[in-house]
Image (cartoon, rainbow, N blue to C red; front, side, top):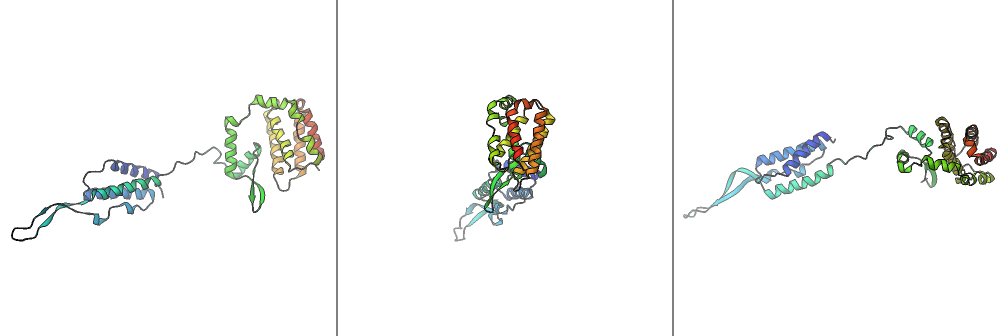
Length: 280
């Protein structure tokens, strides 16, 4: 198991040693290097024995030679009293370990958002309240609506971005624009009403724009968004309930009729009445 604190200490000590390798690698230096390797193993949970120095690589060093005697006696090599490791081999082991440790260092985790700690049902509730549509995926040969946890969080974060939020000025102009009212799909969808059609989904989306009007109180906006969420849940359901959708539309209509928004949405209310009348 990776221990971040132990790793930091062991890794820093190794890097310090790596930057200041002594010129002569005696047996005590090899022993100290092995202590560093063992500390790195303990911190990372990895087997780093491949980077240690084999025992047969630490031995007395030839420091001279004595010639044979004039009487024909054999010559011999003179060895040091201390054991050494070959400098090039020692350095190659350290270089290899240094490169391998780079693969063990913990990767910086992706920054977590305020939504990561929420439970699935809380994310789904936010998804409905903030009008996030699920996505289509091909599952077992057929297209289905899905909304994985990661998908909802990513959509919420995008909505939180200032660049993604429409300004209130634009929204109010949009609501009062007669083109918005006249081009609403309400009239066309009543001719052949399909609760799962793209036209009906767009019709419901228009409520969100109207709900952002400053002429509505926060409570009224919240209630409208709740009904929109209910409608969208049923639109995305394999078997949408026309009764529930109809009651939600009636509730939205009632809010519009009781507020100043009705002055801005009179044309849209006519389409809404037509849609409600068509739903059985």
